[in-house]
Image (cartoon, rainbow, N blue to C red; front, side, top):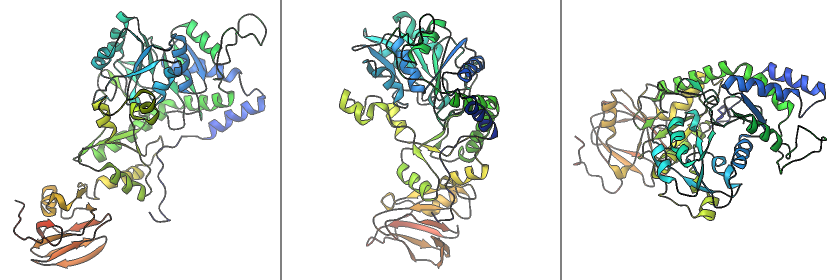
Length: 469
């Protein structure tokens, strides 16, 4: 990456004059916490998602934790959740002493497979934490049907899914207690924060009490604490930011859907790249991140290295919870527990994605997967003895870009004459020439289709009798 290369971040919030205006109003009011802005936000977000009640809290994790606390979870209890999520989906009940049980995921939706959830239930199971992964709604009706006969509490971790719809209705409107989050990479943000949405006034009142050290807001003095609680309070400053974001949420969701559609157009036709699952009649995604799944033969680390070298941020999205170091140490989890989730987690990466991402920046982010003429970039190893010529002819383009990285130099034995370009340096090659590609680095290789590559090999094995027909 050159000094002139502009960094392309993984995420960026959309903040404008309206957020500044409302924050200034709060600052000038002198009431920075436990004030009317929080109540106003709670009313508006509840209406937005179709839930009667909402309670704003300091984070999505805080909201999930309090719902687990209210479910009465404790030591010896088991809770089923997804292995493919942020660690908070398990930490929320581990904090209450409950044991994590992981149900493998559906390879298409990346949400828990209901059949795996049902198979994981034991006499000690007390709850299910369902994750709407990457904004795609989980199979809520099936999970409720599974939970009901066992009297299991179902909690919906919708922290990545504000604005998503399940069977035509917003997440949060289906009667299951749910939590949304407002970290800066989410659809809307308040810097930090979360909200519990519920159809139970009792749950709402208990969350409001628990978030402020178990304080009672009914009878008694200001310092009347009726239960052990937490400091999970939110601030009116954050509520002001969230209200401004809520005003433009429809536009946010629209722009993010447009950005996702542009990525799909850029990447859908490329071999070895699987784009996120499309919506169907029952599931409408709210776009949180844009995560692609690479074919098993593609070296993810090298793709990410290429992106970062060009100033494009990327990340593994997302490692399995049960393979995190503390999970291995505390519970003895290891590879093989959830093979579908593990296989996905080893092959996924996130591309830059945010509300106001520029279309040209998306083209730039997709560049390592495509050439300028739309053909696939192929990574070549001499040990595979791949024919560059075949790759070019199959793609049907006059030039094709390839990357080669190996510990030894590689030679291509040529038939015919034409132009070969390595890292921008052109050379004219003729029949019988051996073109040298240096070792130990990435190289961009372009060649005219008039060249016929007979074989590829490492020295001193220059055989011209290996053909790729």
